Image (cartoon, rainbow, N blue to C red):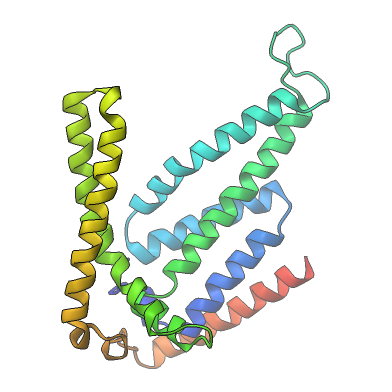
Length: 238
């Protein structure tokens, strides 16, 4: 996520209200038309926040592995009127309608959740976790470890993928999985040791927050908060 997006000049509470409102509307809506509209709004939010369509594209690619089985199962096993009576596959209109409804509902909640997580920066999420009564400094330690571990584990998985393409031996796959788990644990141990050694420099309380703009962005923050509260109210009435 980009901490330098203009979106992060808004107040964190205003951004949080916008994300919560979108997620509440996504959860409460039962209309296909409203669902498609909320998906479009959430995708545009992600595009504005990150100044890129990359995350939207990756999310669509991930969602297809959930949507295709949902549609296929409901098309095949839902009773009702057949779409093509002469076909051996019993596709029904009722199954298509139910599959589309569930798929859109899943997609809109998925994109709304992504938007909510992007509404705050990584440092703000860590600070919010520390403010919760049930959290502790140990929680912050694990959260801070996520970013370096993600990079390290990504490089490790890429190397293992190349190794698998070179060998392409199914009998050796269990051994490769065991070695992958061992390497991942070793990388995590190294990253935790480095975090412990430089902890005073990476303490959460010392992280800088995004610069708050002047009166124009303060007005935008208030407007965003009002829109977020309005969205929460609409979702409550649905």
